[in-house]
Figure 1 (cartoon, one colour):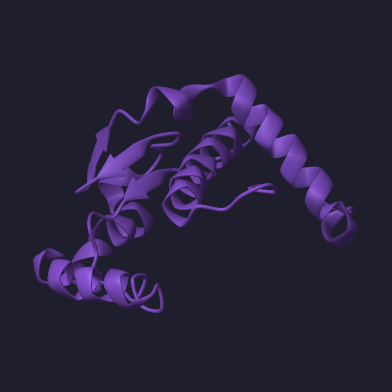
Figure 2 (cartoon, rainbow, N blue to C red; figure 1 turned 30 degrees about the vertical axis):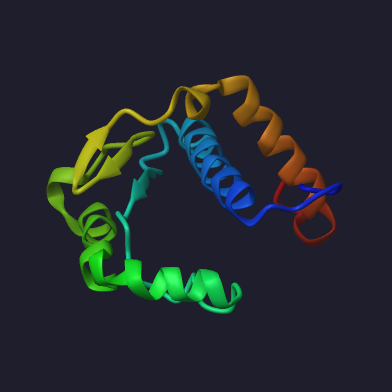
Length: 132
């Protein structure tokens, strides 16, 4: 949780890994229920993420943004997963450009996924206690 120091790109990467670990754990917990849970990488999307990061970062982002895809293009895999009959029943997968691909080895660590689930449960218990 970056309690001692904070580096924005390291925190960003860690948050993406946590999203994947959490989703895979959710998929395992929902197994047999008919509910699916998948992750996807939208690609390098032109968003406002680079704004407000200081002059140098803003300038670099404005140059790089010319090579990034539109938010609409970045959302295509999400729309596919939510609405396509081909994706029905697929769970615990990582997608890029509407294709299931292998995610990082770190994201496949079930012990870490379970630990993240438990830490998340503890951190949100006061708001979600009846849900467990």
